[in-house]
Image (cartoon, rainbow, N blue to C red):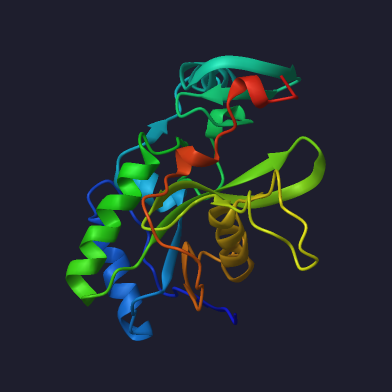
Length: 232
């Protein structure tokens, strides 16, 4: 399998007045999307288009703390200004996904209310525009408790299997796999981030050549149940 990852360039700044699907369709046209391509979109432009942006009032750090707590269902850890929280989506992440990067001055950006639904809506519009079924992944940058550094993961998915379950199959030596589940949506999100970067203003990328199974996967499929989470 060979993958080609194409950044979507010249995507304009997005606001709540914009139709995010139309913005992406215009940016995709030069790439001639076709069946089998996968579109990865950073959540920031989806959140902006959906109005998940808050204007800072009063003390900035206090405002952020209240916002993070309002977006959380539980606080897992605190260290100084850093809060590790479980969001209403079930994600465990820094500051409940509340972020100031790539936000207009004086504002903070939240996660989309329902990233899976957002991905599905975009996918349906792309299908209408291009006559091709393009799976859509909405991504965000997460840290990991057992590794240094950040990587992009899938928080919303439509049109492909998010977790590829290989249990019951065999490896190259014939040994049966008992626990192997591959987070393919996360892997695609991370691969796309390599061409988007954090400071380059490129909010989406088209992944071409992925031959894994399509299906009704969701970003929520990647959330580990609490009773399986050894870090809580």
